[in-house]
Length: 320
Image (cartoon, rainbow, N blue to C red; front, top):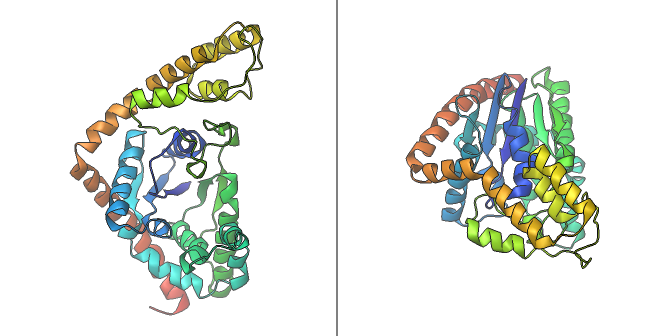
């Protein structure tokens, strides 16, 4: 199995990013081969500040390494360090039907809201297909909202193979566990766009204050409460041990407690859970050159595979 996944450097990761995706695809790094990349070319559709994009790309690499991505097991690199992806993107675009891209959700949603959509957003799925196909990836871990992009990639690869022969490995989506849906501080899905996130590496004191401000219902302290579906309990359950989770559920079922008690427990277990990654993140931040070296080594390794696949594509369609 060859796994590939990318993460856009558009901001600091939050609890939803981690439990909904990051920790699940890092767990796949012991596959036969795994490629993880910082998708800075994709990020250009939203981040237009040069220095900010560079720093966010480095920060994202540090975050992934601190959270357990092992460069001895997986290849970690920055997307733009692989120029082959841009050429492959063009070769794929020459045979991609316009209608296929017009049906993609991100483009359709923006147009439906009357917002202007640039060419980068419109052709985003083709670059994404190039990212996947360039490494003969057969498994792509994604959330349910990204499955369409994998289907588009499969369509593009299938059409190319139909014209030029069996050039590409056809990938399949590995849908991430949606049970890991993480509620935000307002009870909705945790998302930067909703402004309801809790960052992974936020300072502990400000984050405790943020947790203490989570809005709860107005039931009396003595009333029993259903734990599952309660924002605080659902967040607590992500970090707690089985025994702690069962004890907290019993407390909810009995009643006779205040939400402030649960908020304090949530802050405690979250700090404990991320203590080691937080320390590792601080070490990496003090050694940015070490991180850049890891990314450089990853790019060199990724380019070996990328150049092999691109040469195969070039030969197939007659540009080499």
